[in-house]
Length: 363
Image (cartoon, rainbow, N blue to C red; front, side):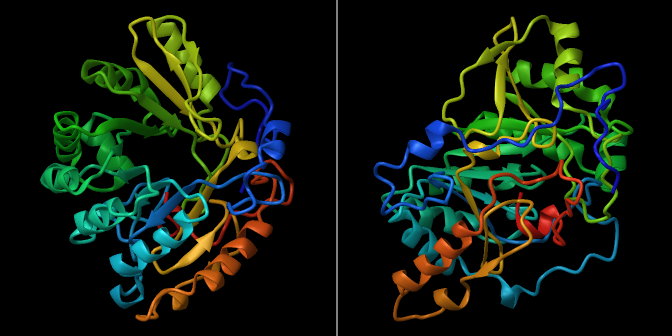
């Protein structure tokens, strides 16, 4: 893997890559954290990302290998009942938001049943879904009825040819249909795009226009070293700073929008037209200092960071039909939190990406 180049973006010069450290406010915001999930840097964890499968129906370059993918056997996946048990337990210690991920979560049958179970947990305020959108059109009604609040849909291009090159599959029409069905629902909808310099960098302006026409936010995510092929390098990554320059040249000045919460990963801006455009600059401008997320993999491993190399297994603790031993679960979660680093360390000379790719962790 190549080291990060300070001249990412050709003639555009984004700010130097810095590791975001927990802020003083974060470290002192612990007055009521005794019974909450707090790490050694004072970060209180309120968000849980739950992967329900590692299976995906496309093969995006920035995530999966093209062929010969070996997925987990169904028998190793946590059941929806086990997932709901875990969420109910950790909600007692402050988890308030759940995002369902994969793989492609909509490839797992009956996902609305999990949403329904999560909706019954009193402490959970927000249930969201991240999807590639290909199966969304057929499932949106059931998900909405079950109580889903929000959906983020990946949309990296509007071109079928580029979509096929990027995802190694056909299907952009299905994605757009899923987006439009979601926009017509009561759900909050956001679009996510990941830009590869050699594949879809010419699609940025069209994507912003597409989102503006539907009055939904468009967010751009930097390419991270989490691809299964291990082909990440800084020359393929288009930084958020470069994208902002490109968008401003077309639409006019971007006005920063205050984050709804300090843990929000995207820095949002407002175009002169009112459209919101966000940037998740995980590589060039890390936001680790305000991270409030934990992750549960599809087979029941807890992770404290997307880039972490350690996992803590809770699957056995969720198998007891007589009930979950909360104290044992909390001990595992606390051990996971105790090992959480101040930052992901991508810019460190000795950084090594996790052995798992994005689809195996949960995006």
